[in-house]
Length: 343
Image (cartoon, rainbow, N blue to C red; front, top):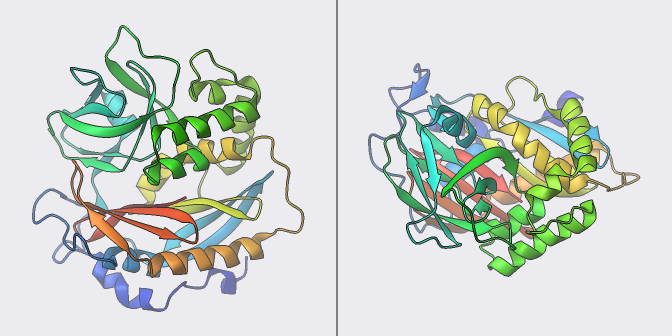
């Protein structure tokens, strides 16, 4: 790819680099994220943290596998990495416990971070078990030793409300873009079930309980995911995010506060995009230049986006917005965007 294709999206990003660093911490490897005031600017119609982040992004190479194209995203400068564990890491360590409420309810679960590190839960991560499988409704940053906290979820298994274990677990499954978009849009439960049904129909993955997990367990889908992971599963060094295209359409993008966090979460995000492109044909006449043009436009709209900011049961604040028919959410912590999603 030529240097011109990697141009900075916005010149203002050069001036914003310093704003990404917390005073007095520029030389630190990691930042403590729980001291000091909570994220400010709740209710504002613009997010300065989001503007700075997008202003620092540059486009990397484009890679393709079938109908799926990935454009890697880099940052002009690296901010000190926030010390957080992913859901899968915390679950494997036994420090994150997810259970049904005492009186189980479809749209709520109880999470308890018993570890010494903050844990990042992402909207779209799927939890298995309990009375039925669920998908997380929003990004949540759980502080260390959080104690039990109620989080919002949707059901992705319409035909079951039973089970001997109250605990739920993660097996690395993530909602594909159309389902994830419904989640970020705070759709009603019926629309979420409808999205699950559409994926199941395309994959010919009928399930007695109408479970989304049956889609990713269908042999043909698993084979497709394996091939996609072989080709696209290793992000270039320094990547902080990626934009995924299904044909010419921007299916979604994710950007993280640092390359390490992105690299640890990319495998499950990639599998979700692979599900989206299963049984889809390559669109003729669509190449990297068209993807870059559309991505530039989407990132420009994201940087200028108006929306609303609110808190949830975790740390920081979530800035929610819409751009060109896509839903966006940015989790901000201590004047930085920990995770940006647009789907």
